[in-house]
Length: 264
Image 1 (cartoon, one colour):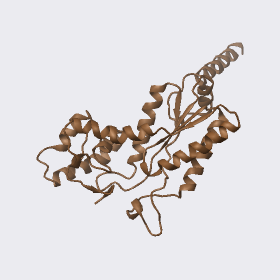
Image 2: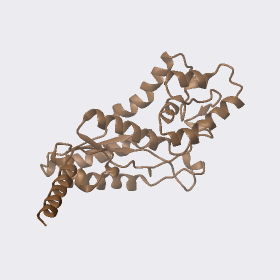
Image 3: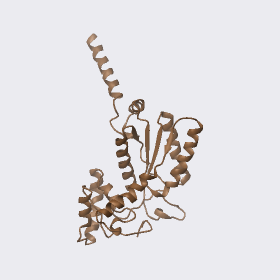
């Protein structure tokens, strides 16, 4: 009996130690509530809320590209910070009106919600994170269409946080979107790619992140990119060269052109 009780005691101690060890992931949805509680107690008080979007991206790229990029970059940022977790990606965002269909809503598969619904969702999530002990709430917007919404949300939240003297702050750094768009395009120019090859929407910059994705993403999406390169008779090997430059498997066809940010 004594030996059995000792084993039970050791098991309980072992479980408790494991429960309060460093979280095994920065992704909130991959953790248990006890792991999140332990992370908060150990100083992980920044939460990153990435916003993506589900929209048309031409025939060569899946609808969820913004969600993939937002999650990928948010995870990289959280890992670099060392005191942050990443909330699930907000994939339902404003993408244009429904009646009549406008913007990306002219293409099947795009999902849209009203701006006020989007903003209320973000505010409610932020309030929940504040309640649980997070001190810095960071919105990363991967889509330019709702940047104003993020700014309004942050302004309202900070007014409430200040009024309550909570010490909590909300942020929506414009530098994230600028780096992921203009900054990435500049890097590609330095590699010798033309404006037509870089594109405006779902172009080389976005394709490079897809190429950095999971094996499942590569299996599903990269063959479509390769087919388009072949159909374009791209003897310059744009996709192959791009693929080497990003040091990952994949690439995009040079013939895909865009007008007004939409697939032409």
